[in-house]
Image 1 (cartoon, one colour):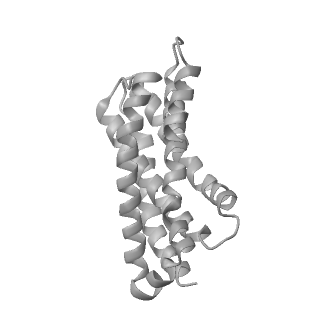
Image 2 (cartoon, one colour):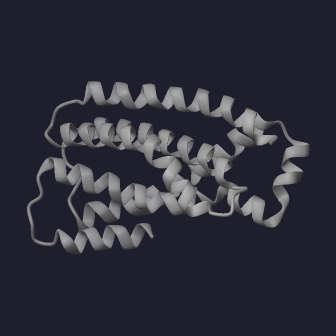
Length: 189
């Protein structure tokens, strides 16, 4: 899905000069569409195979949350290693402040991983997983994506995105602390 998104965006932008805001928006939409299907499956597979009940009995909820989070973070790193160079090759090179790009990528990945780990646990036991996952994650991901696009636009333009980075890392702290706490409350249900 991620490769198809980046290739589709690349062909749509072929031969065109994109503004900094459009480049930033397309980058994060491509990353989100690439990561969403893969990251969302973490808890759903456990419920479908019946191993979630064993996890509920054998492990503490915080251990399960952070274990799944580490799995999703590793998946984010691997998929990003493929999608980011492909985006730079097909759509637009990642120009501007490399330090800002790296911080935005790290903070965005942390938040994306936290949201999808938490929401995947919420919807794993439901019958309409896909639609519910999309509906549940959209309000949590929208502020993140807007901050990442604003920060990436500033990075492309050559300025350091202090305010968007503060927002992204504040959001990351809130999601990780709140996500682990909420997960503990709903995991045993």
